[in-house]
Amino acid sequence: MHGLNLKHEERFLFKSLPDVVRLEGAMKDIRQKYSQFWDGICDRVQREHKLDWNLNHSTRSDAQVGIGRRSWPSTYNRWCSGFYLHGISLERLCSPSSERPCAGIWIQLPKDSPIDLQSLKKKFNQIEANLSSFSSVGISLWFDLGPQQELFDLLANKKEAQFANCMVSHFRRLAKLIPLVDKVFEIKKTRKA
Image 1 (cartoon, helix red, strand yellow):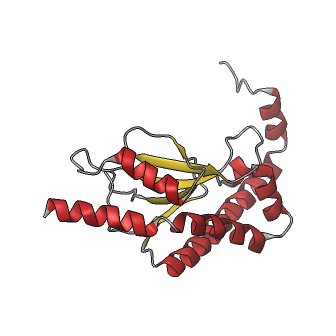
Image 2 (tube, one colour; image 1 turned 180 degrees about the vertical axis):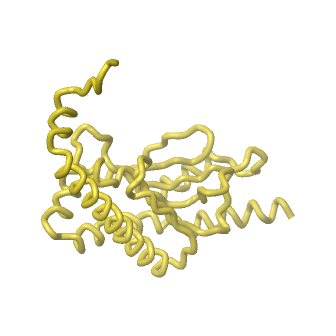
Image 3 (tube, rainbow, N blue to C red; image 1 turned 90 degrees about the vertical axis):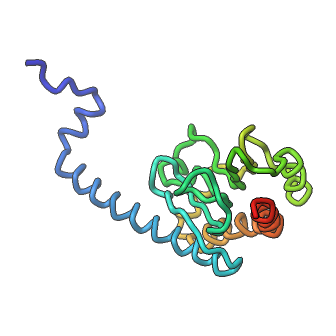
């Protein structure tokens, strides 16, 4: 028999297991409240911009939330084309080694789409400068949200309203692109008909 083979930090936690279990339960509750907090942010943005779809993965490993319209198709059934805030989980916000949070537009068109992605990227960049491209297949244009520690400090210092307003302002910045996205998908419907 080989035993547990615990590392030093695991042995430390194991010795304090009753406390660790309580902390684990508390962290589960915190994640649930954080997810509900993001539901409120998404709801606020959706009402303001008449959007009807959202994705809340604020507590999952992909650490993102997204909003858009159901009429904005994608090659993926569960992921609409839309606007996303990425890297916003509590774990990522409190870790200086995590990639910085970012906001952007993600459009993944079917292969038979008649839309010229390069000219569309140029149009998006004319409306919203400082977008960096991370895809050659679809459109994935992003901008940095700033240091994660600053965002985490807002939450840790009971400035949740300021954090929420900051996230809403990033979505508003992206919302300037809504008319162009609507036009893109209207063109696509027209050409298919």
